Length: 143
Image (cartoon, rainbow, N blue to C red):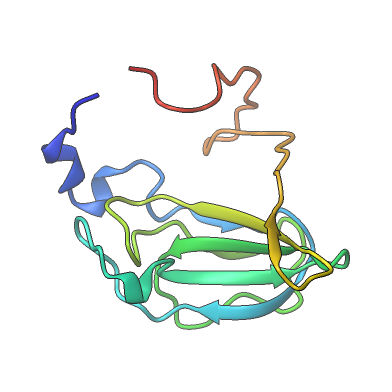
């Protein structure tokens, strides 16, 4: 697959999902929150701001869930954060080339190390609210 440089350096507003609200997928307590980093306009590879503006929650089962690359905000989300409540807005902050959301889940192993936890998505809907009934392949780009 070739890189489309015009897309890579397009204004954030050219991306359909940019600015849309991101909602909590599960109940949790906000344990970390960074929400004042500036937005990128194109690629920013600064390793000091990898996840950009982010919210990390801890669930009752001790798993950790993070929402990354959000837009800057005056305040972080409500705490505790309940499923379906706003986390922030989809943005392009941190080490990022275009607006998108990284959602990461980790389960703490008894040794104290974090183990990546597989995520299961149910009741998927488009930004417009239409139910998603078929996800082709594994969700990765097709060449």
